[in-house]
Length: 132
Image (cartoon, rainbow, N blue to C red; front, side):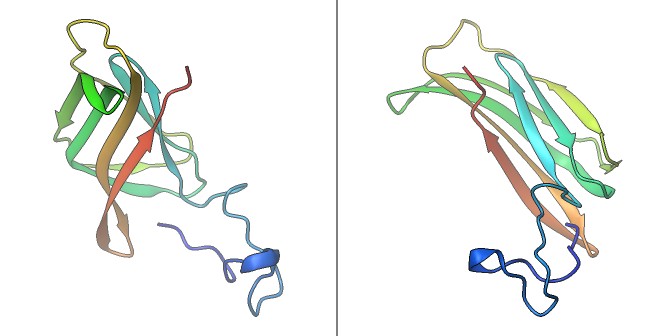
């Protein structure tokens, strides 16, 4: 993924030899996030400022519901869409096969794909609990 100038701050907020702190959270060069909208939609969003090459050769997205450790529902999709150059503000809504009935428990959404970094494909898995 993108590389920040300087060194990542150590404990206490100090940067290494460059003398300046680098805040990746406030202005990330590369940041893909997952947004869940149960029961049958998820959205991938690029919130960074640099373009990323995303590999969707075997994109797997799911929303699973669990209640006291037992799976009570599942919605999922597998896509084979090749690669995408995602610029700042890019997003992709993914429709899932919804569960037959409204499941009990808390939903957790996941997405697995790849990101190209310096010519190497890096596997990525995102997980999010949608707000209640």
